[in-house]
Length: 134
Image (cartoon, rainbow, N blue to C red; front, side, top):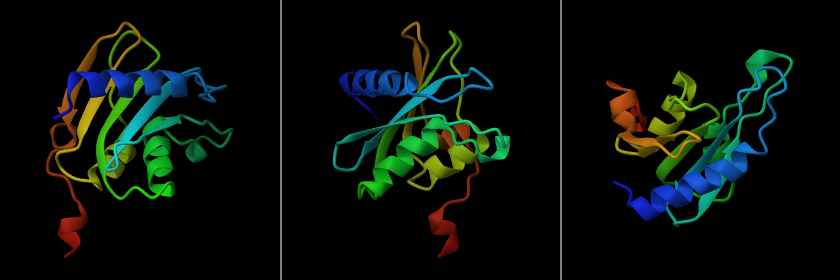
């Protein structure tokens, strides 16, 4: 699991990324931060599109930024939602997170400073991953 200081660092980066979100339609701003295997943190925000299906979530943006920078492992992910309730990643994001392991820690945070820490297997039980293709 992630140490408290790492969780706080991930949430801070997610908050910075959330400010850059492009959400003119839903006004639902989300920021995320992925902890790469190297220890570096990569931010991401949601980017909406008038053709709604082309919208991308903050979680995938952060992970794709990490991979584009050369990371092959994700050691953790924080997601910061704009409301006071803690949300959870959509199904597509859960599957992308799962690509990097059953035990990836996921921090679900809100603007009031509260958070839950879960493993991806807890929020995507019975998942399908790379090992199922071997």
